[in-house]
Each structure stands twice: as structure tokens, then as C-alpha cells.
Image (tube, rainbow, N blue to C red; front, side):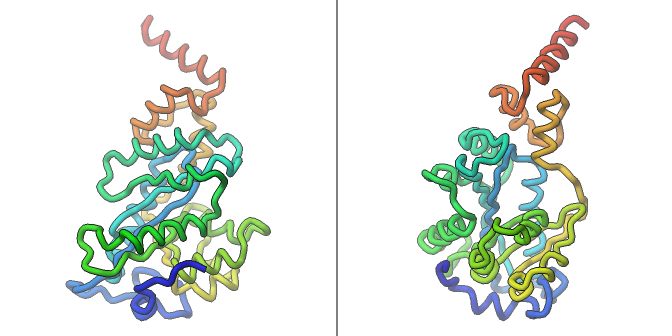
Amino acid sequence: MGTANPNESRLTEGSAPRGRVATAGDVDVPGKMKTRIPVVLLACGSFNPITNMHLRLFEVARDHLHQTGLYQVMEGIISPVNDNYRKKDLVSSHHRVAMARLALQSSDWIRVDSWESEQAQWMETVNVLRHHQSQLLRYGTQMEGLDSAAPELKLLCGADVLKTFQTPNLWKDSHIQEIVEKFGLVCVNRAGHDPKGYILGSPILCKYQHNIHLAREPVLNEISATYVRRALAQGQSVKYLLPDAVIAYIKDHGLYMTDSSQKARSTQKNKGKTS
């Protein structure tokens, strides 16, 4: 199991009642909080490529936790999956890490971490959480604005990831329990998903639902990396779906493009030169 959290008792006292999912409305927010629980948000995934929706997850989750009056988000971490995950169309991790770094140039609180992608083998999510937890216990108190205790670490995900907890043989029950019991989840809703239903349909999630925070994205969108890859393969524009620097990187390295899409792009360029 993961390292015991030094703030665990405070989290239990300040969280929503055990009979329901934690939401921002569960807590009365005083005019000024003297102390808040420091939190670091960790998002694991392919980021193949990173999209504006991935970045929005962090912003929405931070707003939600701040609105509870209990938490202060200190940092966000993006951890691209190892190449040995063997997912279809997964480009090399050095490209995915580089694109994430470019996407985060304008953020003053989110960073990309390459530890997971640099391991000799694919790492299960719970092991990535354990690694970052150990790093926080060792160095977390050095963060600016912290007095003593290391921040809590929470897994950030979209509702589509929460749904995968129901997929047979995909997650170990012991890992799901450790994630929600020792770390906690911040789940941002996505169009077409029912996160509360997923929680109620799982005995483990239901038991620890007080440690699952459901954040509502007021502007729902269906941007997905899968759609982006398909659009790129067909030579279609993905402008405003990804940061411009990421789009430029994809073009410069010929990522996600088929021969036909590259021909389509070169044809468009030639038309622009002759018009």
C-alpha cells in the first residue's frame, strides 16, 4: 500500500459525509480560510497528443478544490505513459513529453514529468502515484508557500477514466482501492458520461466516495486525442484544439500524418503560393 498521508485526519474531518460524493457544494466556504490542505494534482495518460481539453482538466479541478474552501492546489503534474504501454498509434514518449512541455509554456503551475515515460517498462498508475508521493514526502515541504506538511497527492482524471474502473481485468481491485482510499480522485465530467452512476455501480468507489471529488466543467466539449489524430491523418485542421506550438511540433516531425494527409497539406501549400 502507499505511504500514509500526513494530512489524512484533516482530510477526513473536512471532507463530505461518507454517504455521498464530495462536491464543492458540500462545504460552507468562510470568507477567509486561515489554513488549507495543500494538494498536488497528477494526471496520467497517453497525451497522444496533449490537447486543450487536457489542460482544461487542471484548471477546472483547481477551481473546484479551491471553491470547497478546504484545499490549496500547489502544483499540477502531467505524466505521459511509457512506450511499453503498446497502445495503438502511440508515438514515442520523447515526442509526447516534448509536446506537453510546449503546451505548458504558458502555465505557471502545471509541469510535465518524464519519470514514468523513462522507466524500463510500463508502470501501473498506482505505482506512478507511489513514486510521486515519495517525492512529495521528501521534497514537498520545500514548495513555495508551504509551512510544514507535504502536500496531498490526488489523481486527476476525466469521467471516461472513472468508467474504465468497471472494465473487467483492466484494473486490479486492490489498486482501485489504494487510489481512492490513500490518494483520492478529482474527476472532471465529460459529455456522455455519468460519473455518479459509475461510483454507485462500484462497491469500492461507493465505499470511498467521500474521497472522490466530482468537478463540473461548465463548457462541455468532446475534444479527444483520438479525434485529433484522425483529423491530422485526414489532413484536416486542428487549430484551436491544440496549442499552436504543439501543432507546429507535429508538423515539423510529421506525427500522426498518413501519406495522403501529407500530400493534402503540400497541395494546400502549393495552392497558396500560386494564388
